[in-house]
Amino acid sequence: MAEPIRTERGHPREIVRYSANERTNHWLIAISFVLAALSGLALYHPAMSWLYALFGGGPWTRVLHPFIGVFMFLVFFLFAFRMLGSNRIDARDRQWLRQIDDVAAGREEKLPEVGRYNAGQKVLFWGLVLCMLGLLATGIVMWQPWFAPAFTVTVIRFASVVHAILATVIICMIIFHAYSAFWVKGSMGAMVRGRVSRGWAWKHHRGWLRDIDREAGRK
Ligand code: HEM
Image (cartoon, rainbow, N blue to C red; front, side, top):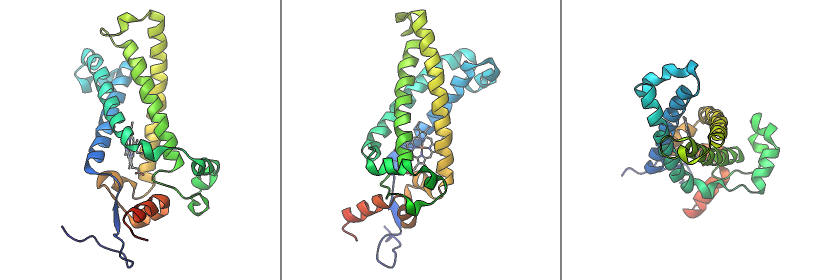
């Protein structure tokens, strides 16, 4: 294997942020999310029923949507368990959130040092976990003909309202997530190639870079 390009101090210029498995897992979540959202929107309102064509018509959309949803839930939790340890919210994260105006203005030098993820990413992570759990629970209550017969009409109606609200919230969160991924230059490289530059890590996740150097015995 070729030697990595190194900085003047002998550090490798690029750092691994996601393994091939993690990236495959993430993109499976993203693809199933888009399919779940499109099939869900088709079922949600007649104005969006033209989307049925993507799934082989109305009846097929109704059959496929819950299965896509369960698949998305499973791949999401596979990934979320791997990322759990890096998403614990601590005192530095609370300070970061209090300085959200500095975040928005890009005054990163004023913010507390960030670990593998910043507080915004962590809040989004926990929001996604809650939405996914809620979507699964309410989806099961509505799932015809398997589980819905076990519930009263009132419970099913309530579940469908909550399901629609959670779906709206998670779609907004993912639009924000994808926007941030493009906005913070270098982030997409992390999820596409698996590697980031030292400069990117130093600028956005300095605590994480220090941990990596410490583990590798570098200063
Ligand atoms: C649709 C387009 C999407 C794009 C462009 C995208 C992009 C990215 C990028 C670039 C990262 C790496 C950020 C970093 O390491 O700092 C990331 C991480 C992540 N993404 Fe996505 N993503 C998308 C969809 C999704 C979906 C649908 C989900 C879940 C429902 C998701 C969940 C996550 C999670 C949990 C992380 C790790 C962040 C953490 O653990 O706090 N992504 N994404």
